[in-house]
Amino acid sequence: MCRKALQYGIVQQLIQMVMAVQIAKAKNIEMILHFGFNLIISLYACYSVPWKHNKPLQETKSSATITNTIRFFYVTNFIFGLSATLFQVNPPPKTWPRVFSLTLPLQDKLLESIPGKPYQTEGMHWWGVNLIGHACILMAVAQCGYTVGKKVLQYTMLTSFAAVYAGYTATYLPESSRNNIMAHQAFNAILAIVACYVVAPEKAKKA
Amino acid sequence: MSVVQNVLRVMYVQYFVFGIAVTCFQDQFLAHYGRSDVAGSQVMKNTMTWWGIAMLSSGMAGAAISQCGDYAIRSNRPL
Image (tube, rainbow over all chains, first blue to last red; front, side, top):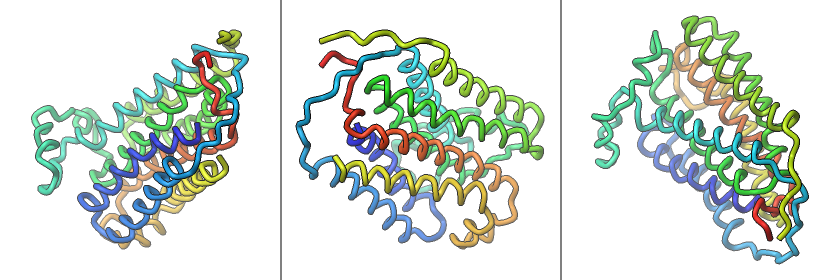
């Protein structure tokens, strides 16, 4: 499972390597070395460390609610991640591969829909890549058992609360944007609470 | 398993360090990266806040996964 999360997280490191070359405006070499190091240790851990064939432990509980909540989170993270990277209104750099340039006519109205345009293009790229990476990790978690899913939801709901607080204190944003952010993050937190503490897990099916 | 777990720990510690730096120490972070052009920009700081929260979220997920260890091998599917 740890291995699966690392494998899926490699997607983020690969995109970050591209961004260090194409998007970053300073310390490009530092970034390439940093992301390259992360990529190499992830590849080593996933593909070079021998796999111990311990007898897998059987999960005694299962919860479709937890799995579906995690799926919902990774789909929304992917959508927001793609919106913040490939579908910004601002044109991509001239060196952007042609295949990405083709998405220009389809550009989302993400920035246009937000009054006051409070987001910076380069920052959005890094934010978006992180959302995509987080979605990949959650995708790995969704494929595993009840215990991991519940623990991940419990831990990540803290950042939903942090995001509600950040939205509340972001008085520089238009009122409508703040309300949208707080409503979205509160919904995520409530969903995680319901999945973890309200809906009882079922007994896992035996092989 | 421990090597894999330790690599995951390295990853989530990085997420936490960068997440906290990007949300709580924005001026220092921008100064370190030599970005005086956007140092005073509220727009950049707003973007960085949400970027940092996304990193903290990934750090939290990594911490949860690494705690599960071998137990995390368990799957929803019948074994």
